[in-house]
Length: 113
Length: 115
Image (cartoon, rainbow over all chains, first blue to last red; front, side):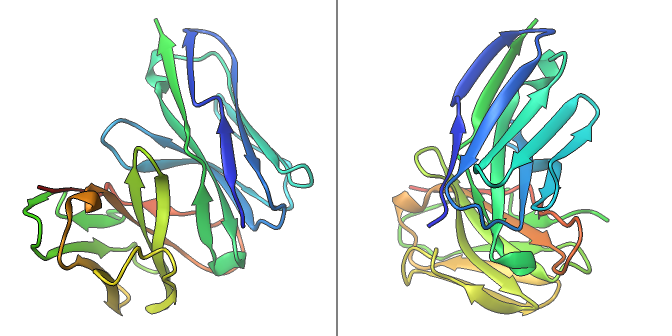
């Protein structure tokens, strides 16, 4: 059974720091991996999607990497800002192109001015 | 596109009442997913549909929960009778199937409180 773990559960950093969020999954047979952001009381916003054949994806200050064989992904946030404060969720898609997402419990990030 | 639309945004109901949550997926997306989010368990898949057909409902907690997708543009999740432990945020998401860089798009969720 696929399990997704995110470490740390919570992280507090001063503004301007570069930071890394970690995600691990137990079964390397994934279709893709997606990082989401969730603000308090809101829905999920997709940040980056990495196909199983890819190694990384970049969007602005965000960079996500995928090492499928070791069951790991990282989300790198450069020059963090208070507006980056949110919960970041990692999810792997299983069951092929029509399969479902299995989520980690998230990392709650607080960026202090 | 307006994205995935869920209604209502908030629902407060008394134990034992029937609750119906609604979802309109993005036009052209043929996969639809219902998730439940709680502090203790995080996001859990309840059921998902491909081309309006239920594919996996193993996450539906018990017979009190049922979901339908009568057409490509509408789905409902019903709880009857509701219980306090059903209190959670329920999210609907849709996705195009097939190959390519397709991810999920989530709705804003329905916050359900059963008192």
